[in-house]
Length: 291
Image 1 (cartoon, rainbow, N blue to C red):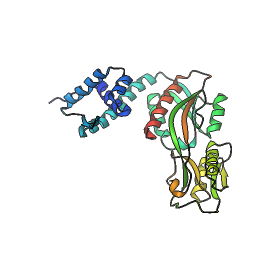
Image 2: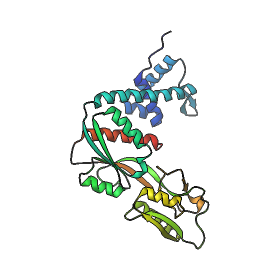
Image 3: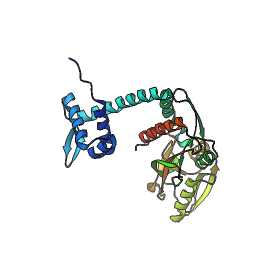
Image 4: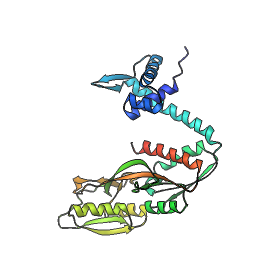
């Protein structure tokens, strides 16, 4: 018995429905009418011989079959899109100078660069890790083509990727860190640093005494100082080493604001390879930050 070839456009519609939360928004994204998108789902159900959605109250949720098909659909579309990009990317050449903070350099960045290299084998990517403010200063001087940075969403060149919550961070096994009448030991970046400023403002607003117990210009040194018990710090949850844990109100600490994660592209030159890398970075950031 020959098996049916599942329609890739229909699979893309299925994935879009799950990503966007409704058939209407999915139809708008893929450029079809809502009725046409609905017909695509019915076609998939006909090919598979089982329903993909069922009613739950007023909403529709995936059936067990739908969950399985959705999982396969994502993988199939990734391979399809990678193949198309690889063929198109063979004609893209040059160098992309990419800067980012250390929070992301050892987590999902290698996978993103691996995907980019497969799609664009003739492009070289020069990566540098720096503090957010320094990255943008160097971008403005023409030393980078693309920068991923936190805390500078008000810039005209900022393309928002995500809004990330800040969190207090301490060594694993930390219990209560706030003690009556005792200043809170902090481990912080040297100024200027918007995380440093946000933490101090939060503590001052809560009338909690603190003292600077450890200061550094390196993220790895900051993590090491916190792990050694020199003080607590604050960052986003991205890239926290396993030796450290998130702290919150249960540890007696005040709440913290959120921070914008944005991509900033150079304005001085049109670099097609930079635009392709930007798309890959956004895709991986969304996938790995749970957005």
